[in-house]
Length: 177
Image 1 (cartoon, rainbow, N blue to C red):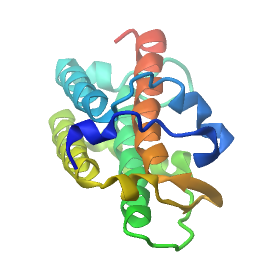
Image 2: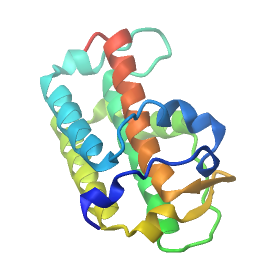
Image 3: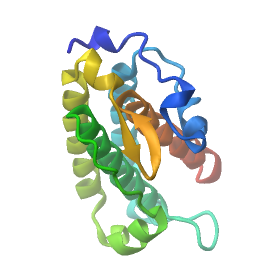
């Protein structure tokens, strides 16, 4: 699917659960693919700019470190992209939710090298951009069930971008990066 086919494909509010509205509302662009490309450049540059000490910084007790936030972005994008793949292919299986805190607690991100995390993020984002760009109009409008709520493929792609923007805003405001 040409990138221009994502034009005018913002999801309607009936295509996702209400709790995703905060993420989707952060994405004001009509064509999501260039947004994902720009985010990839910004996040990769951010990761490469961090020292190991900065990456381990947490602004308060019990809050994630920057390294853990980056890992959380990777995990969440992977889950949302898998959901988009399943639904785009017509799979009507109800897809499970996930507990982000459990994922971070069990991921051992604090033991991972920053460059390794950057490489994983970059590979995942670029693979997803390729996949999302291949979807037809019919595929991006398909709907399924994830975490017990109806969701469309296009909503999932916008959730990825909005979720990342949310965490970039938090990193800027709370972590000063």
